[in-house]
Length: 591
Image (cartoon, rainbow, N blue to C red):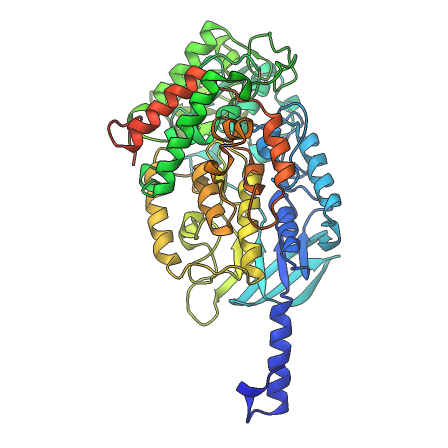
């Protein structure tokens, strides 16, 4: 220890300086929540040599909402993930074999394997609820409740909020709701349709879980009404009827670098030479695929992504293609307004369509005006009697354990305006910096939340270990990103977590130093074609950079065939050039 700068100071001052240096060399980190985001945060911290980590989980097992329980919020009995396993998996443990959609028990098993493989469980305190987090950057005072007692856990240098965006139910303020004579439940408490048999039911709102719930209820109910304020933009999970799907793979298999650049990344992001170079790479990859199709092809499986007969003609789980179903899907998409007004969060579940066609579900998108007793009244003058109202209306961003102000600043210790878009990359408060991170509050329009959480955790771990620094202008960058995201996804104004998958992953990957440089792989044509035109797998971000795993990543990428046809890739290449050269807008509201 050099004492030069401390001459004239007391022995006590020297001791304090030594203790502070030792503490910051081995920072103490508090992680709140042991769902997917919390687990990967602990793993990424360990990769950067940060091991003094305590995770507090209120339940008795890992998994967050995927930790199934009859009396707790989270997944329902038949929940199947809307994103396929290759996009839901973490980049440091990609799956192998058939591409399919995990049942919630299969994904929970994956998380347990991940936790055991990387020694994560030793950091977790189960049955422990965080009561308060107070203090200032670098000095966060935490109290918890464990075994029925309030325990002071002392001071932490870093706090990670990974409690998830599905904690506090959002119940819309409907006039007269308190007069309803039936039963009101939120989708978070739904497990199965047993209680709804023979009843008149109303499902309010439609997300990806809501699509399953309204279908299951309508299978057994006397009547089912789906009440909407606006129509969703729908994506069948098996791609039909939008285009042929000979591989029977998930529709998210079509979400390539090329596809995202063509449709899902704001045009203003692409002003650098490297983005022009990427378009050249897409063009070259498409020509290679055209001439040498074997570079992107694979074996046609017998089962589709839901383990159904690949030749069966399914558009989704247990949902067969029919002209009526296809017409209805197109009608919902047209009515969503995306074609005329801009981007909307994509609902990747059309299993309820068949029940609308068969008359089991009646749809009303005029909006509920009021409730009187057992009747719900709509803006179009109609009304419906109901025994149950199921609110598929999402969640509020709420962190009751964050208390007081940020030090002595007078700024509340909370997410500004209740919107995670006010955080830098949805992770860091501009007035706090790197010592408090919100991880798991990024929901890609097409892509997996866990992959985005892992990327955020990689960046945080580099900051916590002193290997990276936040930009000095994060307040200005955050303000610009807020305006851009709010405008880009203006048709989904209440979903503050939503982002573009490639847009988010690439922007944080640049900060981490693991962004995918496509030109590096031109001399490896099979890998190059699949990188450009195949699925944008999370493991692509392990080809280079901190804690890279190039061999494992390449094996996973090469195992997944290109889903798009050669004609589709050439068409998207041409659209990308037209869009990025600003010759023609590809979709309404393109920024």
